[in-house]
Image 1 (cartoon, rainbow, N blue to C red):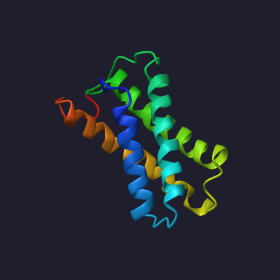
Image 2 (cartoon, rainbow, N blue to C red):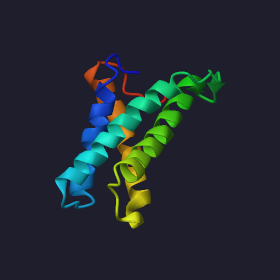
Image 3 (cartoon, rainbow, N blue to C red):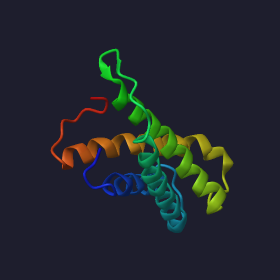
Image 4 (tube, helix red, strand yellow):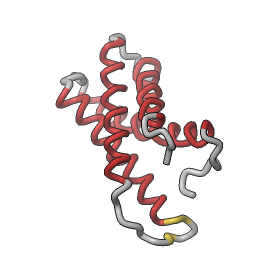
Length: 128
């Protein structure tokens, strides 16, 4: 986990804004910023919840706690970020993009984990 609890959420939110703007060609920057902000809040909330999960032990060649933490973070981040964006902010009129936006959140979370590892001089390993 990050030593600064806000670094990963901010990076994830920024990646989501960029993806929404340039991959999905969202013309309204305000919508992209709301989506990124909702995702950042979702990532922060997910990290708080995921840290309280019990340890599974060793799962194959991977530490079970780390694997569980990463999967919970990605799932909760995607769910919370999309839910906040769609239902609280009422920001997503195009329901056809729902799965694409959830995939964008999950991908941004994955990349943000590597970016924060690099910035904090930790080994670049998602599951170790």
